[in-house]
Length: 564
Ligand code: DON
Image (cartoon, rainbow, N blue to C red):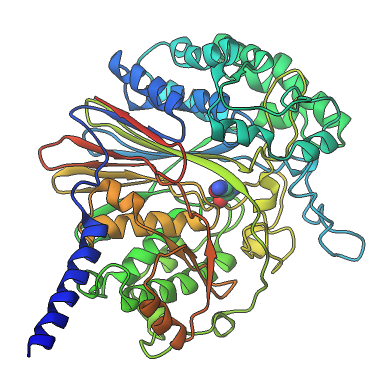
């Protein structure tokens, strides 16, 4: 009897400590009464917060943060890439802007295949041909024209100052600049100032004069400071030196698109996310709507049943993504069907708690290795309660590794997000088909999932993350962590993540996400595992009862919340 109660006592202790590690109240994010910016870099978050302190709104701050990130976080922050913004104003009106890159007019469906029809090396990933026509600057101009309240020049100036006067590199900032030195040297047609004799180290001041001049042209001329005039000329000269295909016409023609965001419901909350050409919104809503009928809060966070059902749903959703998702301006994406209740019920009806369904039985495909990649997300709420979620990318770390000589910025390698050959995986192991094949002027499919959640009381969560194919499932888990598992924002961001994308057929986990017992149980059901150092960098904001804000900055990197 004594022995039994001792065992019970130990079990109770273990149970309490497990709960504590996930929901320890001492783990919380930065609190702010009025406004909050959470981004990948402390200096960029500070730039955004300063705009908000001056009375700028969430869109003003988003523009300033986007330009600041292009300076202080050049591996992913950009003017040579593209992205998506999802927003909700203080009255609950929602919208989204698509400033995703486009295939150049001279692009061709098989441009990355050799004569035998095989994928030709790494051309969709490295070098001049890998770039889509950039959309970020047009996106910022459009957001400003519709929502800006402070002068445009005041929004670009902090980035100019950071580029011109420089800023002090942190250890990880320096390490970021030192990666891929040889590749940058090999691929560029002119020396790139960032690749110096000696490597960068923490404490160095990083000055970017060409970038400061480019930003100054954008500040003075708006859209024309990038899409025509000297910057456009420098981009096209760079293309011509490196056998790229972006022309002056491509740049002049680039237009962002306002799109109606996708709206769904999850346990009484409204989910507002990015429609195609991102797959993020469709997939996120499919995931949430499918898991709604399972009592995962009762199963518990990281219980084997929760993980089994999450990953089984993920396999089916990612298989749909591969076949049906692409740029809606070129391919009819069956969004209504994919989100139909009956369709999802039928689609998920084969999920069995006794065994995992092998991915081959869902649909065929192949496996690939994932390289180091970079995108960035930031979340903003202003003092009026307007919210903006922006995810923006160069695709890989430093994009195509091509710096526009004289203009000081890197170009994206977003062409690899197209399905360069049907069924052949891209760098994220994602496969695609006709819906996402290359067509001139078409946007490549994305996984970026800037998302806003609200309910009857108003704004609740602003969330998003980088991470390629893992973006969708990281946003999914963050929402479940708050809504089902009762976590605060920082706990939800800190919680270990896992991911299944149908192919390859394995659950990717961060180290020590699952207890050995849960893992053994899932292996017995037929799941396979692979570990990854870290998955995603979620930057999110939670509105607390009473209206104050909790910023959750991802501790996996130097992401920072600044609020007041
Ligand atoms: O748009 C997409 O889905 C990809 N280009 C995103 C790349 C990414 O997130 C890389 N980041 N870590």
